[in-house]
Image 1 (cartoon, rainbow, N blue to C red):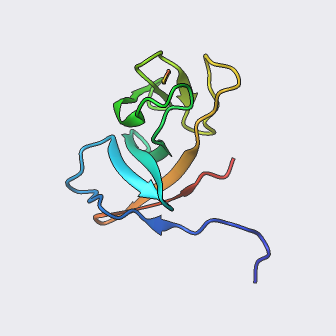
Image 2: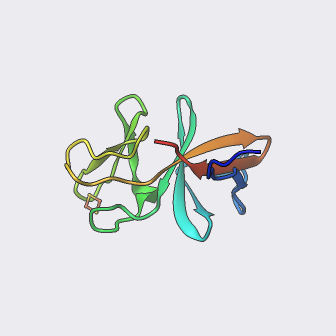
Image 3: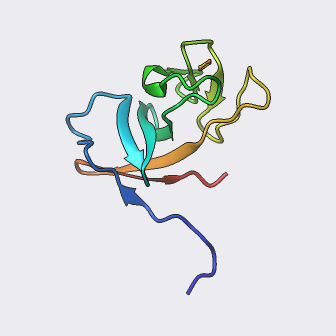
Amino acid sequence: MTTMTEHAWQALKGVNAETATFPARASFEGEGIVVFRTKDGYRGTQRACPHMQATMLNGELTANDTMVRCPLHVFTFKLSDGKGVNCAGFRIKVYEVRREGETLYARPAAI
Ligand code: FES
């Protein structure tokens, strides 16, 4: 038995990992997220940029796929913990994403 509150992995419905184009639109517990395919696997972020809510579906991977940049005003966030690197005080929610066959599973990243 565990007393820790930990988010369980949840299958992302409506996204087929084989056929999806990344970044891919998905939702986690009713919240819009975006799944990126990086060199190291998959990572998710909240869909709305924390600056002025532009969609991160247009986000661009940068810094060897360790950061994502919103093209609207180039605010850039670390995929590890969501911290803004050129926009102090801004942070994007990040999700761990793993794949099993055609299915992607996500949970909020432990940071
Ligand atoms: S809305 Fe994303 S950087 Fe401004």
